[in-house]
Image (cartoon, rainbow over all chains, first blue to last red; front, side):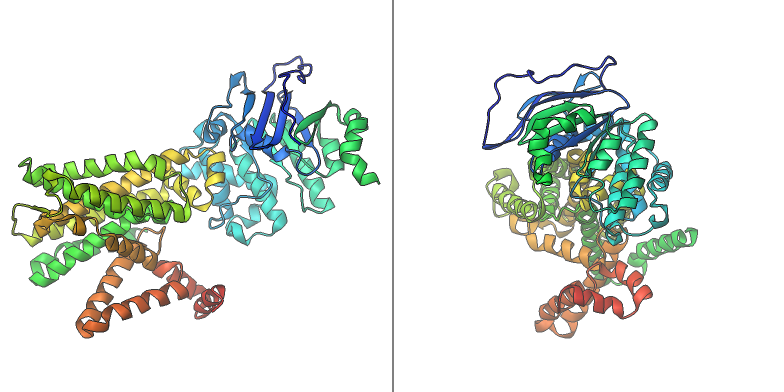
Length: 261
Length: 314
């Protein structure tokens, strides 16, 4: 099961011409015997959307946790805006401009929807707004953007599934991140709602945000991603333009093959 | 808003006038009620707002008492200087132990703080200048009025601090930690620092209460200074009144102090049993405390109680 890597950086691919906003070099995470993420290397240019796919247990969420700082890497480096950040605590990375959503959603259950989102505005990029009133204004804008404004006074634990997904997104947006990590924000949504979220993600990208998105909804990830990264058993098995990657026989076998049988 | 402010100011003024008008027993009862309310309010900062149920606040109370006593007895300092030493000692201890202990969550945090309380009592029992397990006798000061006003001032100060927390960015960070610490961290809240500050703030206020009590009672020993039942009282009173609210701990402390006083005078031997019954009923029927009871009852009437009961599957 475990395949200890021995050639650091060997999987590093061609860098894009513009300086990357964000770069991962030979990133590895071991949980005792299990190698959850092994020798992953990639970079994302500003304003790009990178799709991250792979079967269940491939290490996608672990990778996002390594980048956002909720997990510490075993080996490898993470660079953000030319500065190494893998030793920084999660809140410092948030101040630098990295925001994430959680697949297993983490709302502040006892607070109103508005106050949930205001936390992002109060503590996000550059340490956030100092004034609570201004943070609330920014939070309201994010709620409008995600279509939750009519629920702003409800408690977060009173929201239904799709609205919880929207809340998770609004909280991350309120931080005004430069890099947004989206961990399955479309899971459990219907087709119409998925189209809405896809449109929203594009809109956010057009404002200059760089996005890494984990998704199982293949149609959505195909239309969204500028590039696609495929993980399988923690290994990076493909990286490139979505249509090329999805034709890659290795990817088809590891990921799509099971579905076509 | 302004009418509320005037109401609060006149309440404080009325309380401040008690020593001028009331009897000596009333003043003495007032000192205990005010200082336990201040302790509950200090506990509220960490337990109510940050969500860390501490059983170590009696340690800070005890350190405040011992710091004051040692400075006054061994160092021949004035009470004011002593109080400063007590607060410094407690805050330093909170800073020192806060780092490792605040990494623990839920019951593990509670157990660790309980352990701290036991350990500190043992340490003090072995220090010669702290009077070992015999204790220290402080210089006598006859003037319950002063202790009453000091306790009131402490409660007011502590409540002002909590009122500031309730509307500040700092408080928003603490509440985010209480509601979901992982999410708070990822959203940019410096959780280790915020938790440490909350603990140090609670420690400082608890220490002042301890120092006042030491001088008032003129005698302290490890058993009374590091009494963990005092900490249990802080928890019960805060939860009874409404944790994470500005006035909840005061309402809880005053009403429970009154109830226990009343029960003790009416049916002396069975008093604690009834006291326990009141608390159990309160926790089952109004888990959000008296402050939430008002809101819930206005919205749902008696259904508020029934809904809470159902939630516990009773």
